[in-house]
Image 1 (cartoon, helix red, strand yellow):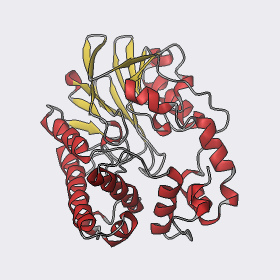
Image 2 (image 1 turned 45 degrees about the vertical axis):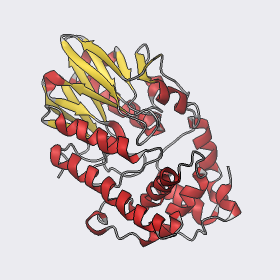
Image 3 (image 1 turned 90 degrees about the vertical axis):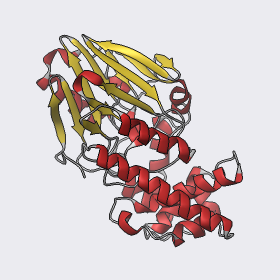
Length: 326
């Protein structure tokens, strides 16, 4: 399914690059660079400062004038796509209005405090360390967008037109696609997880499926996901099919009276079982159940993490008071 698996900086064409993480699991995110002449646009930063600095150094080696990047676009609010913003000094930082608001809710210092307390959280803490223990969240200065938009925004990178298209709420509240028609490339953020399980923090699922269809309709050759290898339209189809499959399986169990965690444990992952982080189905089913019930109030993040930890084989009892530790 994927076309490029090796970590590091990859040239996708004249003045367009993908930065690929060594794996597609929790926190290991991709980024992109679009260049024309002396103009440059960076798509996303990474989860911590060390990772982001390494990426920027590689980009400067490939394109020396990117020492001063003009524009940074954050595709969404998750920290693995924006925690490194402070290192792109002097750039205009653009995100959707919904993403900018959502970034305020889980700044890096909250993640740092959570990880510092993981050792006292039993199996849940072990799961957190398993997912996020390779990253350093201390010392990061929260650097929010300086410009926001709603719906769509058209930019120029030298002579290259670049279109930002808001397709959220889906994975998060304000997911954005970054399309460079001249390069025949689209950077999707976490609308696409390739060879990894998507996680639907927000929904509705119909928006995410529609976002996949928008990508399928684009005149592009290469598609850079938020996680996993560079892909093509087949990879988009597989993500869409996963979402449709889980939606239908969850609906059947909702109608049968199972609760969300029972349903998540009961759904056979079939062809998707080999994707990384299959335990994310616990979040996906919970979000779908909220949608089916017309319920706005979300399940607490610590409870969702506890459910995923239990499905991943850690000694955690979802629903226990310890799972709600802030």
